[in-house]
Length: 602
Image: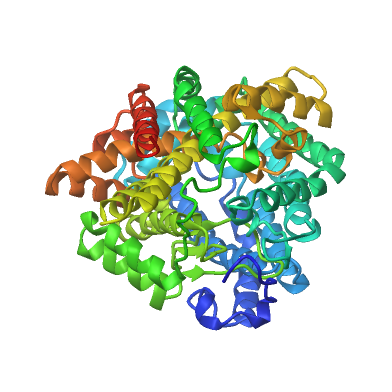
């Protein structure tokens, strides 16, 4: 598939290029039956209410019922959301997704008494319960719940907050539909005069074209759509921030950032250390931009000039099946079993929905549930090296899910996002090492070094900029300051100036980028990409430079799921994220790559 073709409609996509969801439900009728069954079981929560403090047996019975219901509900939700993302214009799929979300909201209401009743059990009684063999399996779960004593409300208040959850998703849902289904980005002419319709899937490929006029036209045309809707987009983003702030205050947290980090037991200084460490080491990035300007022989470097390869005669083209071969070879340091599962999943077992089609959700992700394969959505493009890295990245997530689910019970299988980004970027680090270890010519080496520089720039430095922006906009809304389109853009522009430096000419339309980042609708998510790649490089170095013990420590980390807090899992694997050292190490790698590029281009 290439960037010059029109996207296929969903019914035109070959089956082998789609994910196989039959393992979830063989038909929509089977899904309907389970949805109806769960709806009828909602009333079975009521008899548990008011009994949880009676005895360990009563508490255990309720927790088991809730756990089993949740497991079945996740399966219902997974099928609905995957079908929804195949084609956002399919009204039947969207209706099923909405019904699953409605059931999820009703479930939250039905079981909302559980947390408040657990918190109401006197401390001495709860300690006796936790020592009872009856609750041994649930002990870790309960201890994590009890951390929230200061942030848990009465039963009626908890039910009220639960009932508001569906309404609270309005801004996020509206942004998703606008960005993925309703926004169109126009067309441009490529180098050969052919019309190319711009999409989320091919935008980055167009910015990598050697013809500067194509890059400039793609950039300007793409952002015209966001300019036309900037006030609506600003309103949606502000609405999302306000709903997060509402829940922050309702749950007695000082800030939304504190609430977001509390869930994973991440100390706030980890966030601040990240931003401070990146601020101190931006000069190699500025040097890289100056190098780009010189090699491209242009008087002004614009953002649409920062993605094109500096190896002019080195073009990338790798079909999906070949990418799987390269990825599995790159991952050999993790052992034969790991690689065999990756190959089987990405090819024969159809974990992956491979290519863009009309209405398909943009971007990429790994998703699934305890009772499904770890599916991957991607919009693979043969002529974009980022597609290969994205596939390796999402395969890291999926393998983390696979090992967690095989080695942990349902209650403790889910790992947090903080460690999820470690597994994904670890795979990218191994892919880079593999590609650079091959007998390649100077142009290909330049190409790959540039790509790795851009990966660190995008995952470590750019995501840190996003994290700083997110911290600033939440601080503004928490202080009661108005957030209009102009306020968002002005705030974002100042960060662009800092992170791009004096060597890049910032087009005014780039300020609109703050309105097109989906992760801003998931409070304080983006910093985990930056900390994740830092931990990943540290662990990759240990595995590549170590032996069997280091590999097994990493695989044990993947198998750990949610059995420990994320920083404890990483510490057991050999990385201490409470210090800025891993971030500084990754930034040193970036500096070394810029040095190498300068040498190659001398």
